[in-house]
Image (cartoon, rainbow, N blue to C red; front, side):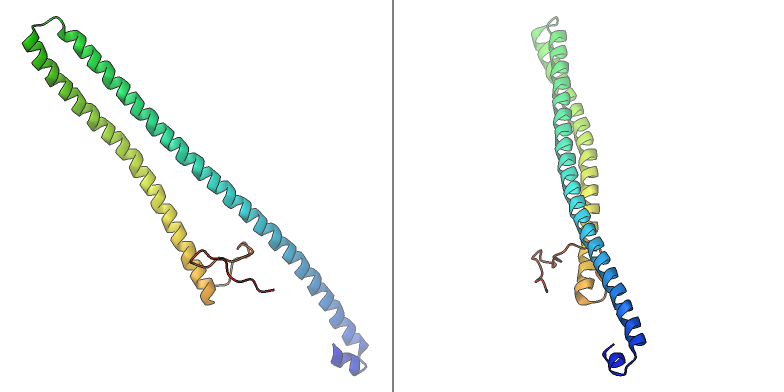
Amino acid sequence: MRAAIQAGRDDIAGSFATHLEQLRGALARTQGQLTTARTAYDKALTVKTAFLREKERKTQEALGAIRDYRRAQWQRKVADAMEQFEVAGISQTHDEMVRKIEEMTAVNEARMDMALGNVDQQRFQIEEEAEKLRAGELVKQFKVEMGLLAPEPSATAAAKTIGGKEAQKTS
């Protein structure tokens, strides 16, 4: 633009000046969009964290309810077995009662193990998927830091390094 002004070509300088102003306006709009996108991303992370905490709390609450239900069933069955044995002889009743209680206990423990095993397996699968997502994000971040990949426009204002420390800001 200077060269055009010095050469007396105000028409070319005016064209450059107009183009420069348009680019400055586009830059300002893009920076505003970036700020809005970063804010939305931060809010989404907060909502995700809250959701995961609530899901974990409800999972633990459900597991506790399952354990309480199983315990109540077992106690009811023991009480029923005890009532049945009151009419027979003492020795026969005692041996039969112990055998039936041991059998019921084994069956109920196996059922409880199966039920809890299914829930634990689902939780481990969810944790494994989350770990895979986190690993993918770390690889992407490595690539960005190495200059092999352009940073995403939705990245946070202070880019984090792999160690979790904030990168130094350049102004």
